[in-house]
Image 1 (cartoon, helix red, strand yellow):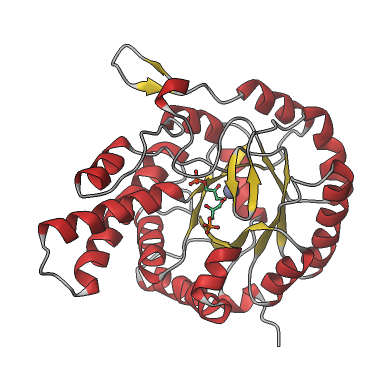
Image 2 (cartoon, helix red, strand yellow; image 1 turned 90 degrees about the vertical axis):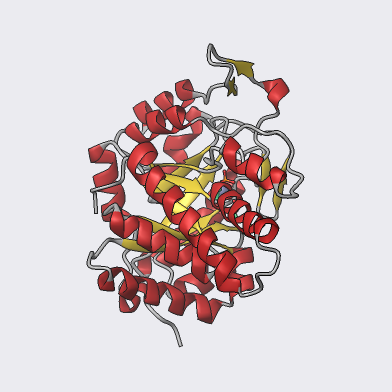
Length: 331
Ligand code: G3H
Ligand code: 13P
Ligand code: ZN
């Protein structure tokens, strides 16, 4: 038996993206796998009155169980109402790699799916994306496609090198597939290890600055697709204080630099209307848990370390909505 996202109180991304493009901000797409992450996302987005995309990878869906996850999303809508603010909430499949997975998500209550055919040839990517769009649109579900390949790990898809999106391909891709939004590659990458210190320069304050995103490519795409929603993956900033806390309390993370917040702010003001953040949440959560484990070694009640992790996540997401994406107050 299939479930429509509408019965879960969710919305697709059409209206949230139209408002974001118009208003010059980006809607946060935060990945989650468990209850504490979901609680923090909802708490932060209600407190900042931000629309939100609850983002689930194939791996997360397997980890949490598809049934349980659907009901968690339903619960998230009710939780937001209970907190006193009805924010728009979408449930989105991140990096769907087959038609069957996208169909299964659509049939089980997702309001939006990504079909990531970026590792296929242009023609194969279009054919797969079009097939997903036809099924999704028949169910009122919105679809994100991708052109160009990000460096790093895209779920099961490993891309050693990034291939920037070719602006000359975007019009044909969008018109022939009918996608509702387009993820592009302009220099971001997935995971916590985006740039090594050697790839960066130091600014006047001694802060490591990575090579800038290719805003020239983004601008060319905007000219070709005026008002069309663009998506930025791999947009974690890798806060140094979280990396330091993790390493101080027994972790062994490599020195790494993420996407500077000013660059995300600039992207959010442009056609970029969805910004994907997963790794920063993982870092904040791990830092908080490691700290409790070292400072209170006698503690063994999971609430005593998952609670502080949830608090740290809430602070992080509020900061992003308020100071980076500009989505606060837009619900
Ligand atoms: O882009 C990938 C996301 O960060 C999800 O990662 O497949 O480990 O859940 P995951
Ligand atoms: P980060 O690894 O930079 O958080 O990117 C997440 C992402 O793009 C999920 O699709
Ligand atoms: Zn991604």
